[in-house]
Length: 83
Image (tube, rainbow, N blue to C red; front, side, top):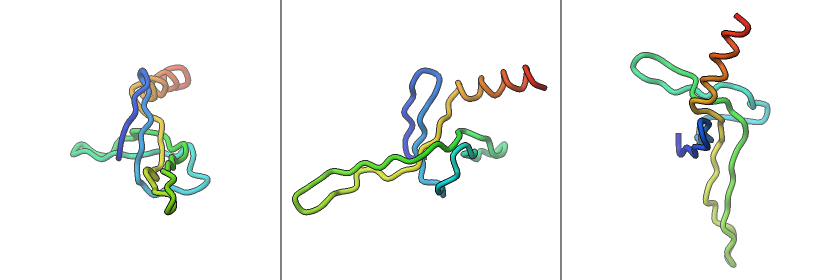
């Protein structure tokens, strides 16, 4: 994980995990001593550059996932509504 940008109960999680076209909707795992947990859902990438007279400088080149407590609450509600 490189950065997280919270927006209410959701967060944009920037990461450098291996991802390619077609991975959208796939899980992003985080590992703790208790085991792995899904911390987000892959949704794309973020590429920012700074133009200069000598060529562009890459400022960011990260993959992006959606996560946060809002994601957890949505999963809990879905499991409760459709057991």
